[in-house]
Amino acid sequence: MDKRKAICNLVVLGSVLASMVVAFTLFGKDMRSSRAQSPGVTVTDFWLNGGQEPWGVTFDSKGNVWVAVPGCDPAPTCSGSTPPGKIEVYNPAASSWIKTYQLPAGFGQALFLAFDASGNVWFAMPMSNSIGTLNPVTNTYQQFAVPTAASGPWDIAIDHSGNIWFTEHYTNKIGKFNPSTLQMTEFTTPAANSQPYGIGVDASNNIWFTENNSAVAQIGEFTAGGQMNEYKIRDNPPGGLTPHLLTIEPNGNIWWTEGWVGMIGELKVSQAVPGTTNGVTEYGYPATCTTCGGTHASGIAFDSNGLIWFDDSVQNIFGSFPDTGTGSFSTYAAPTPQHPHDGLNVDSQNRIWFTEEFANKLAVAIQNNLPPPPSPTVSPSPTMSPSPTVSPSPTVPPSPTITPTPGTTLAQDTFQRANQQRWGNASDGLTWGGDANNSSVFSIVNNTGQLSKGASIYNAVLGPIATDSEVIFSGSLSSFKYTNLGAVLHWKDSNNWYKAYIDGTTLVVQKKVNGTTTTLKTVPFAATAGTSYSIDFSIVGTTLSANAWLTGTTKPSGWMVTATDSSLSSGYCGLRIQLQNGAIATISSFQALS
Image 1 (cartoon, rainbow, N blue to C red):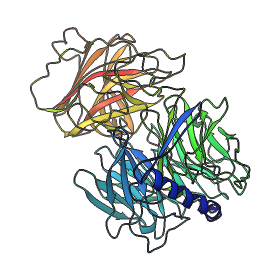
Image 2 (tube, helix red, strand yellow):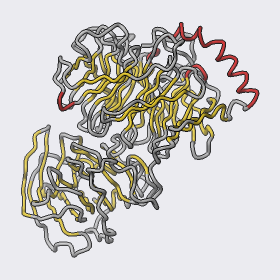
Image 3 (cartoon, rainbow, N blue to C red):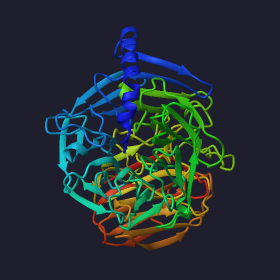
């Protein structure tokens, strides 16, 4: 927590007032207030649309920037007389604020924001000891109290099953809320008074969080299997080591900011051992201000070019460091030096957004030396893995029109839309769920759905829950080494589904029930890397059937695989894809039927 903000406030108060007077006089409240350019980035910032002391930043499926504006500085709490906060929305394409949401009476102040698969905004409110949600379509709000009194719900994240996770910063707990059952569950950390702060979800649905108390100074993990782990940053952490926010890069490693010690940290998960410092590396960045009285790293995020971005609220800088752990830091001055803090985030265009809390501004940095993801006419896409050891995405022949068996279309996606990070909304208007809008492994590139820079199993589901159902899709894998490409039916979560997939040598029908995987039937099917194949997977009653064939050729007249099982009676339709060794999956069409 920022326990030294009061000192910083006194130091900067005069310059805050002066800069506000100048900016209002020259530009007006809604105009760009400053612009700075360096060899690395071009930085611009904007006055808020009337709110004060902005915090967390996130993005919707259209690329709009959503900003939590509590109207106070929780250090560690706000006054009880502070009115409910706001959420403000900025449209980068129009260079303007397009919406302000005023939280209702009885609500607290949102600090961080996260979107669920249905487009609802979730936020934690420490001062009202609750989490809240906003439906932007209906402009309706809901609030849910946290069971532990004065727990301080802080940062927020959404897992692959749609559960809402949050840290309880004034205690030693994290919380989970199930929007379907309205059940709230809390989990206690082994360390007492751990003061959890930042939180995130990895590709395997494990929950990661920072423990902000310098006497603890650990990285916490609550696994998908229900195990609580803690990883030491140092055996004897100093008083200034206060882990703040974290980010999880595509290879699964965890990065975090370290508060007052002028460092960011990395946990290589493959080397990690609970209760030890195994796999932990800390990287110290240069202190550029000799009169600021210290450093304070807080916000952190990664871009698709392999850079970890962070900011320092005392030094009034932001900067980057290669996610390889080798190389040097690049740092840049904030356009208005007034506390760039927890609001740093990177959008699908690799623009770095951060809030300047005491200046009441939102800033954006555009990288001059690294291009953003391309428009659909640009090839190859820089959103693909930049490593020269990774083969580029194979060219996929145009997917033929697939004539489905008679039935009602539940969902479909042609992927004919602009390049973007994550899959967003399908061509039929429905929003992709599972990992497709939570993991940076997913992107839209040149009118295909792609998965790249992944090293795990990823789920993407679309449409409503169904019983008798069918998925037909076309796609390819750049490598079949420890990878597979498949469709899922009756998908409930990552531990309950039916799947039909190809792995280069075999067509497999499989089930997973309560975390236990069983192969139901297999037949030989030779598949070549870089070649598009179509898979048809159907469930009627308790009968599971599957076909696979080379895209563009005639579909088999009968079913190649048939099995019987009654474990799962209904669920979502979608895809489940395993990636390893730099493999890239490319999906050209998807259709779900009932």
